[in-house]
Amino acid sequence: MQKSIYDSGDSNLLPFQGETIFYSEFFQKELSDHYLEKLQTTLAWKHEPIRMFGKMVMQPRLTALYGDETRPYGYSGISMTPLVWTVELKEMKDKLQEFTGIEFTHVLCNYYRDGQDSMGWHRDNEAVLGKNPSIASITFGATRMFQIRHYESKGHKIDIPLSHGSLLMMSGESQHHWEHQIPKTKKILGPRINLTFRKLL
Image (cartoon, rainbow, N blue to C red):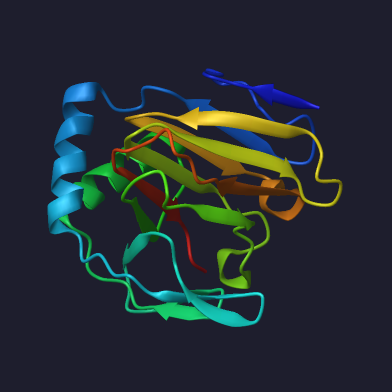
């Protein structure tokens, strides 16, 4: 079973075991255009290796980490030390915290240069994120398909086109029971920047 959701308002996209809510126009186009240009040119993007199936391979995207402290954040065999918030990232964090009532301490930034950059199936379930983490995912640039499926059954697959200026909120038990990915595509030529705000314990 698969469904495609383009905008849910405040409704939960997951049928059970977690909450995922999509807001297609969290930022207006003019501000989204501004943020895309600033993030491309001002963030300290790196191309780093990641452990996959026991081997270290180069990630098919660029990454950067910003946050409140110098405490590192690690996943899949790499450790990243956060840089100090930029003006734009701090503005977004403040808006998110006011909108959601949730505190965010770090943001993992991903730069998809074109449709051949991607992210494989995974869950944001590192112990440092706590039992039921809330992840706020903001997109600027090209629309890319975000896919969710149930972790154990691999069923109930949901396709969500993450568009310019959109927000996807994942919370509750979603990171325990659901996994997500950004697949490769030959249809997308333009860049996309994704920011996933989270709280480290």
